[in-house]
Length: 473
Image 1 (spheres, rainbow, N blue to C red):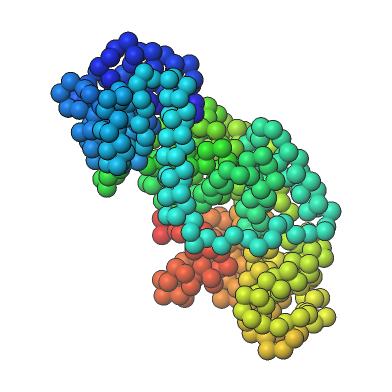
Image 2 (cartoon, one colour):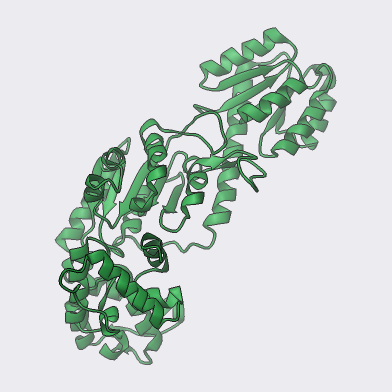
């Protein structure tokens, strides 16, 4: 409960100071108000996590204060303190929305237990609300990381060692787009001592920069237009578990300093807030960019890079994993058979050969999509080479080479080349200008439809939107 705040409302100063001292020793931050009016003023500034209020107060009584607190923020739990003669009033307060009541003379240990329970209940309700808003429709992977190749076995061994650590330092997972960085992050979480706590994934590319701060750190009521209630951010929602920052290299420079403070000091301050909140969160981050190079070129903060890269876990591309391609293909074959009610039992030898020869510029994600499409098109028990709808291994290899030269994911695959784009930039043309030209051509050919243009380029719509913003298109 470290960092949680309690507001104590009681005109018995000696008792209120005793409660404050006891809660402070227990790790809470506590403030005292002598009447309801003062409590309402403190409510605006300190945003308490729990309120203890006597029923009998000078002026406005505790029942009316309860109503006002619930109007202000119904998520703040209020615990009524009452003498023996007013138990009926306390029970009535519970019916009106009080979290619980506490009889006087106050047992300080009982009071702390109630504070702990109220704070935990509030946090669980907010976490549940967050999950319902953001993750209800998200499909959970049906299997862990599959593979028998030495390179993937080494990655899994490292992941197991990381998960076994009693205190997990920040981990940076690197690798090309589609290699399964998110799946490895979830594997670390599920194998760790934090597995019973939340795993919150943040797509740093998909969230607009103007909303990123409020998403990560939360906001207080009235912090901006439409902020009608206080809301925890993703750091707080991940309390006790892991926060996974996917594509962390796309976080705006203006926000990286605040992200560094959260990772380094384990505190966050909500937008519009005036106090820091302590957090206990493991940090996992992933990127398909060369962050070390970006840090040297002032495109990413060096101090943040070194803080995130305490442990670096690199995922190899699928083309370096040998026969794992067939193992994964069989896994997806069974998965999509079940999903679509098909009966495709095996791969034709020629299809197996093509799967092994193809360099997979889109990695495991591309393989998954290829097998899903093939299962849908197939009509018999065998998946044939024509069902795969793959280009030639040579043309796909050129896309991989282009990606390696640019230091970014394969933004210009074979499909773009087939549409008339040059395989390599013209002599003297900067690489970024060439990439911009290819994107403009894809948009023209798709009549400005970003979804179709992204499909034509072999990248996600979010990646295309990032590049459109990057080049001012």
